[in-house]
Image (cartoon, rainbow, N blue to C red; front, side):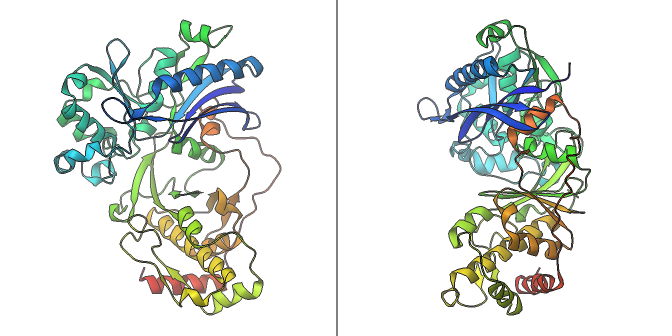
Length: 455
């Protein structure tokens, strides 16, 4: 039977939700949410697994009564792993990756972790590298770690709770964990040196049916029959999946929010620069995806608010090359060590001029990320910046390639996780993509900006 309605457990860092996704329309038709609480008791800050499980079961039962599911899928944030004892319980709590405890072994872990050319993973603080979590847990809690039979990637932990089947999955292993070797497509040298290999389960594709709901889960959900449960997927790759099913690589995808995340399916991972906030992920089809990022949404909020500047203001900024150079938020992005500079004193600029200059700055930073990741063909922009005409114009001019703004809601983590149940291209809806093209005036500004930056 071809699935149409999928129940999705979608656990983000701040909030958890259960959604019902209609695959024919690629829309969420019902949602339940709760905060993803971090508990401060016990050995270290950790996620409220019992609370999340009770919420997921209750929400799935309630939603299935109104919109019967054909299948269940899971997506979660990255940078988390569940340590499972032989009896199926947690041998240690699921660590909050923002906790700084793993930094206790910063120097020792630096010596143990793989080189960037193997893992394509930058060194990140706290538990953002799952390898650093495991390294710390093994040393800080040796007895509990010794009880660990399985180390499960986080989406697959929840699939295990639903089915009783253990598995790993490549998008979760490949997202800045230090656990995967991109050159051999096997576990990394860190896993081998630490003796963890036999604690990892079989690697299964995200779109595999892992199993069916356990009898007790079937009963708790009020199901008439057991339902298939898919292996599950890392949330950033869930967001990427609808685009991969709609178009063939290479292309550039720009997801905008607090962070501007650039992914370039079909791009080149061999020239990624770890000093410039670049890394590689692995998509749901098992292919490496070069990525880069900067805190563009945060920078926009710091500098300006949405407005409608006049054509005369826009022309003046372009003609006089009024520019902002990186970086407003330092420590990340393609220019992490540079301090932002305005080409003329900001206090002499009015609010509309600041908005125009900021929009152009964000476009130029995005273009640099696309260049670093080897993006080709047209660029897809989703999220808030997809509605910023100045940003889109400058991005098209700076890259020399058309830009496609995506304003519809048929993307996102829950939609992508549901698509694991039906990995097909959407039917044409009769609408041609509205592409934004560059122009000579904006291209001249982009060239001048690059001269100022020296890139």
